[in-house]
Amino acid sequence: MSPIKPESVWNLRDEELLNLLQKRAFRALHHEVNFYAPDFTHYKSKYFHQLPNSFPTISLTGDFCSLNCKHCEAKVLKTMHPAVTPDRLFKLCSDLKQKGANGCLISGGCLPNGSVPIDQFIDVLKKVKCELGLTIFVHSGLISALSAYKLKQIGVDAVLIDVIGSRKAAKEICNLDVNLQDYEDSLEALEKSGLPFVPHIVVGLNDGRLDGEFDALKTVRKVTPSALVIIAFMPIHGTVMAKTVPPKPLDIARVVATARIMFPKTPLLLGCMRPKGKLRSQIDILALQAGADAVAFPTDEAIEFVMSQNRPFSFSSSCCAELKSKAKG
Image (cartoon, rainbow, N blue to C red):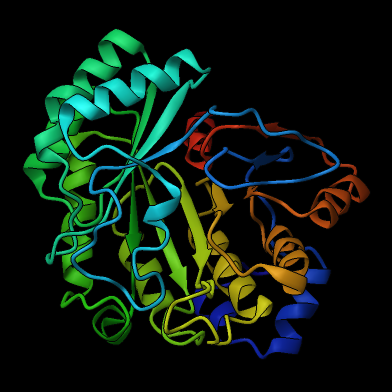
């Protein structure tokens, strides 16, 4: 059988794609499935108990974001620990370390240019690494070559960056006037710095429809990411998009399957942001059939699906970007 081309997968009719998924046409990089459940959101499963304070998320801007994206409206920031000054950040990290944290995800709201204001925290992040020994992942937004170099110099463990393939969605949903070249520049900056970096492809941001995800994947393929995460638009209560229909499970699986073909040697993950409710189990199982190596906050049905396939699996209380380390395995 000749290799499947990414364009062919992307253009398959739904029934054709579903048939390939059921025939196990897409193989994960690793036989073992990795499940992740960091404590920055509540997770309940009969198979795993979260460790409190294990890998919290910290917002450098508190609950403020210049962009005020329509799908979020800074509500996600309210779920994070605020630390808006370097002194507060170090104290917070020290307190979390005493409570059992082994690492943290540094995030925050964006500036008008799509970046997270990291530079003023560089020195204290170095102090956190050196004195507290915490694993540090940074959710950067768009990033300059200089900022990437600084993060590399202080020993940040990995940088996470969302890639939006639709300029229309970026502008109309995220109030961000950027194009794929801006994302490509950020990805190249991260690669040249030598930092491990984990792009996140956002599915269905344009009102739940596929729009630009394949272009985003093609942009990411110009570099060599440490891992690749697929996330999807998730309606959030209280936002203007709260009643917007989320992307179909098969559309999310289409992006995962296409990514699997395009990145056969890269760890591929279904990330934490994706629709909740009755469709979530279907999303998880289809993603695993499409070749995902890992799932964040898996449903019990997804875990049981892996069991039915006689595949070994493990749980971690870390951020799923941890899987980057298995790229060498």
